[in-house]
Structures are given as C-alpha cells and as structure tokens.
Image 1: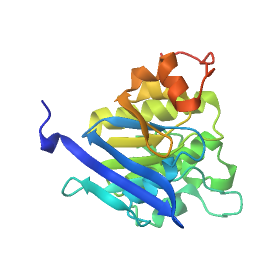
Image 2: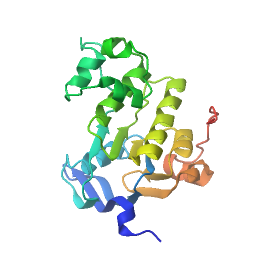
Image 3: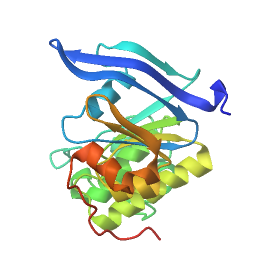
Image 4: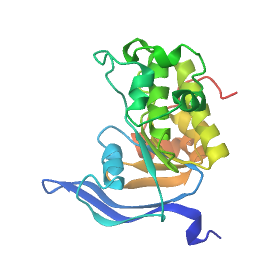
Length: 231
C-alpha cells in the first residue's frame, strides 16, 4: 500500500477550458517519486495543455498537488538554434554555471570540443541533450519533457531515453514525458497516462502494447510497427 509521501504529484478532477471549449475534463492521476510517467494520446488530446496546467501557466480547476519542496525542470520540444550565434558554454553560462563540463558529462556529451561548439552546428540529438543539461543545472527533482526526441535520429533517441532512465535511477529524479512512440513508452517508463480530452487509460506502461488499449487510445485498426528492441 502506497503512503501519501510516496507520491511527488497528485492530480484530482483537473479541468481546462479555452473560450468555454473543454480541453481537459476530470483528469486524475498520481505519480510516484523516482519513476517515469509517459503521457500519450492523439494530436489535440491535451497532452501539452496538461503540462502547462502542471506548471501553473494556464487557468484550470481541480487540484494539482506537488510534494513539498519540489523543484521542476522543463525541457521544450525543440529549440531553433540556427540563428543563435553562441556556444554551448555561453548558453549554459546564462544560469551562472561555473563548470559546463559537469552538466554535459551528466548528459553524455563528453567530447572536449562540445562546450566551444556553436548551438547551431550541433546535431538534433546533441542539442536536445544540451537542453536537458540546461534543465539539470537547477538540480530539479522533477523533469518535464514535451516529446524530447522530435526530429532526432533513432540512435540518438535511444541514448536520450537511456540517459533519462539513468538520471531516474542514480538521482531519484521523477520524469514526466510526452511521447507518441509506443515502444519508447513500453521500454522507458513505468506508467502511462493515455489522454484524449479525458483519461482513457492510466496503467503500467507494458499495457500499451495490448491491442484493445491501442485501439482505445488511437482508434480501431491501430497496429504496432517494428522497432529496434531495447538492449
């Protein structure tokens, strides 16, 4: 039996409306400390809106209860860096980081040349890891990721999710991530919250591979595609 202190987040009866149009209705779930929750659903299901509500950026009703002393880091879906003429070290220095290398090591960017590279020349996977390092600088105990590997090649995607699991294990960081990838949800999260305006399913992540669950989330006829297995 879980005690109340085991949960870092408890959401009850959450509702969000835009111009009287319901976006989220009666959403309730809990997130256990030091675990990863995957948030899944079709486009327009309210996944990003949920994140904005959790960050208290939009009006909402219902209760969002974070554990006392929680510190949240947010990693955006992407950053257009091609027109930003600054280096990785300069980017991280905006947060008064004394040792950029420490945080780049935490996200597996150990190449000594990385700190001096311009953001605009990094690969998609490298840039995403720099954004994760940016979030880690504040030493959060919760990280929110809005589709963190959009536009990233498959190999880099695997590295990023393995790294997130490592952060979870070694530092007890709780991760909430939005993803469309059924295999990522199954392999790299403990629980999933399926949304489509309301809660469709809140269960252990391995349930995502069951046909009736996929159909409930995405509609009849949905099938899994082949995917590289997690090593």
